[in-house]
Image 1 (cartoon, rainbow, N blue to C red):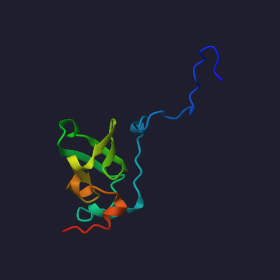
Image 2 (cartoon, rainbow, N blue to C red):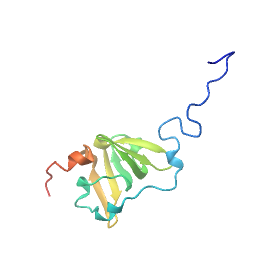
Image 3 (cartoon, rainbow, N blue to C red):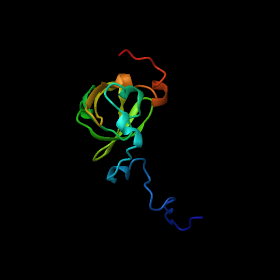
Image 4 (cartoon, rainbow, N blue to C red):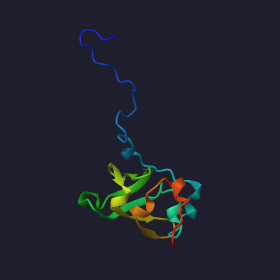
Length: 125
């Protein structure tokens, strides 16, 4: 119970209070053991988490040039961490993703959907 205008204590001391607040300061990004199997031909069927991405083109001019590591992927967005944390919609951007063997440009419209659901889609080769 608060009395005489005492301030409420932080519920989670030592933890960030806003999503993505402290993640930009991290120096490491998880890179799973399967990263060597991601190539330019099969990137549509893989997760993008842990790969380095850059936005080449976008319908919104402020999104162009964002560069960093993908830390989360939802159905319609990618969370990219560089000097800041950006939540970028997939369908309005063209991404350049760095795989272990090459750089791949991919339209964000091809990435729409959860990674596990993209496996079920049929793509033209």
